[in-house]
Image 1 (cartoon, rainbow over the protein chains, first blue to last red):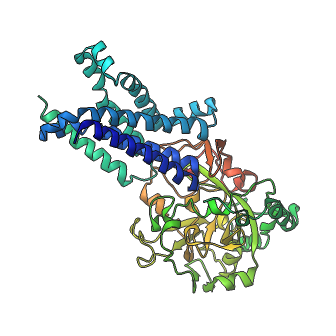
Image 2: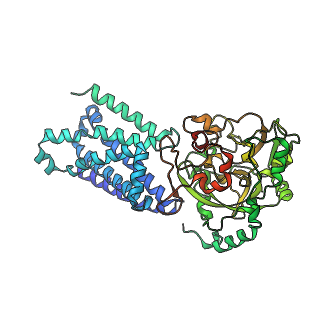
Image 3: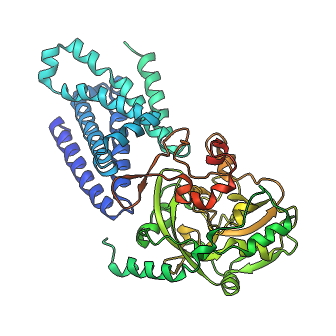
Length: 188
Length: 309
């Protein structure tokens, strides 16, 4: 399938997903928790998804033609992270900065999320061809390898926020471990 | 789906009713305590002095029933907040009996819910509910004082703790085995006869639903929500501290007492504040969930972490 059509489908799918989740959130017992959790979870899927490209294109070289998909998965992931953070700051903490600071300091898992967010910002800003040209491919690639730090931080953040060691973040962490193994064992 | 106004008892009505029930605030000065574990005679005297109706909280605004009934932790029906209410209603709550016994009970017995209601009369109390996950609600419970059931069992000198057991039935509970056995909770005998401790059978004058622990559950408003054993089938007066389920699951993070205290954080998150479910923003968590005046005397050292996780 032609790349433009694939990208178009991804955008359409994400817009429908966001709208649908908005409707679901209105029906949930707790709007705030629902929005906070669904955006966080979706972000972790999308960000982990971006790491799939390197190993999979080794297995299936044709995938290299679709490398741009990775950029948009990452940007949609960033978008979900933004929603996650905006919900947290506005709806959950009602802009009470001192309370938020106390929460951050009391909770290692929020620190992990915060660090991941900060690392994600320069990546999001440089996710365009212009930035690749301006930085030069090598430097740009170096900057974007921070993804290998961001994804473990995000998944750790997700895992630690649970009351019990629950299945979903563990599966995601296992996928990540496998990917890392693959990525570095078979690195060129 | 919007919440119909008919689903919610007008708050004013609830406050009125509470006020009518709030007879004799003076009897709040309880002669309880002194001793960590009193002798049997003292225990029975104390139970006679339990007047739960005395503790009223007209200032609390109850959470809407719709929210109370759709945001629940009941792992036997699934791990998500939606699973217990979303799952098929497989729990058979009638007939239902609660067996009261144990080595510390001179007069064991088997009760059904109607019997409990008939014998002791239904009380109504609006109480704060604080989950260990740092969210909260305000629940208008209906039920009976736990102390009355304990008294009927005629506790002897071996009654030092009370052990609660939830129904464990794979046919009725899709996730019955998540903890490898029945859900167990426990209280000290002094906690169990405290006027704030109740066996709830309803919320907003409607019977409890599957997801809220039908047909009978424990309510201990100064403790974290996991202490509120649901769908209780056995209550035993015992000599040794019962190993409650969450304590067994993760002894570093959950203990026996689990009293609410904003100063003692969970190892992975802060307990200083809480989200009021259905609302926006967070509010500060109160020592003993706002019931410090009533229960603090039960705990000799408020700096001891043992009491607060």
